[in-house]
Image 1 (cartoon, one colour):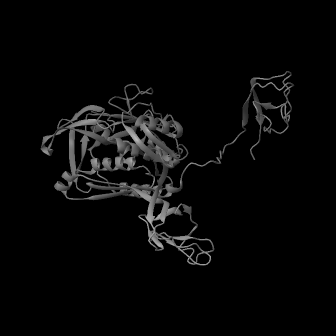
Image 2 (cartoon, helix red, strand yellow):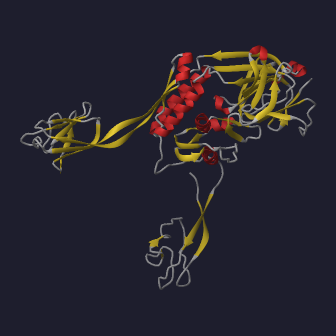
Image 3 (cartoon, helix red, strand yellow):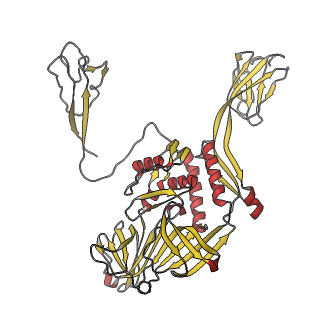
Length: 518
């Protein structure tokens, strides 16, 4: 069976592709869908045709595809990110590459947000509404509650991946630029792959992906603590924790403190010193200082202790079967023990058993959606009617493959990490360290760069108040509404006074103030 393909770039068909490759991926696998197209660029034919961010749509069918694409299936929708010209001056090749609209989720970040006791669907809808562009999401109730999640300037994609990891879900952006986020195994392709449509199969099983002991280290927080001592004539009182923001009372009288490392010789009026690293409160005495507490005195020490968010879990059956293997996660953005525990459990669920990844070369199938499930029945490979998730769908759109219907291969079951995942983890770790200082700010300057003019339309609501006389804008008394000056702060250059013409005024009226950007 011969297959036909239609390429549209910036809405115009560009059919003469020498080499075409498309890879569609489920979002939770750290990669977006992507494409590569090679054109013979004789005499610079395409040099000035293609531009960065041009849309790219690819359609496939078992029959010649008409202009309106009737009967064809769209397998890719994205845009150009890279243009490479290589070869000689009169005969060279132009290579176009880019990603689908998952890229928009990878290119934009979530500003500092904290979600508490919210359904996953609500969180996704909020993120997509506030920060996403070009990709839509229809809110649904996933039915999985997130106790707490803090997001600090990480990409929308990474935020969705964190949600997917904690809720055992999978997500992807389809060819209509719609985000799908659902529990794993929810939607089936309805396809079975066996010896009737699989031309080649390979399987990899790896212990490298196992981790059955998981530590999660989150951020740290200060917690108030009090310790009580009965003085015995000594000058040192040892605390249980290293003290922050210390307050000391001797028989109910507040004492004046200092820092041992900073005040080795106490200044006048200092009653005690804090030895932070050795967790000691040391009373001092002398001509200029207070006395050491008298035996029998009650010494109270109020202070803040610095506590980490730490959770540990292990899977005993996995340890017994495969041996112990530890994974340590450090994320200072995790401030809540419940969030740390949820992440720990999710990681154990993912990593307790070896991962098996299959690669199948398929024929007689036009399109498959990564993220959905399929049935694989290859008894000779030890796989008998098992339901697997489709991780990735790859298309080789070269002319010879289209003629022989050998264009498609898929990856199924569990993805085994490679060097790209290691690099991604390193990048995320760096971002996590940087994000410690991110947070909400009371004031924020935003800059917009554009060409053209802009106007600012303001609406002022005047409320009724009986002042016994006329209303005047900017008048010291007669511009007061409900006891506050709500109009006298407007400054619009050559603005004119307005009188109500009566005792009271209650209305809403627009005022437009032109201004110029320098």
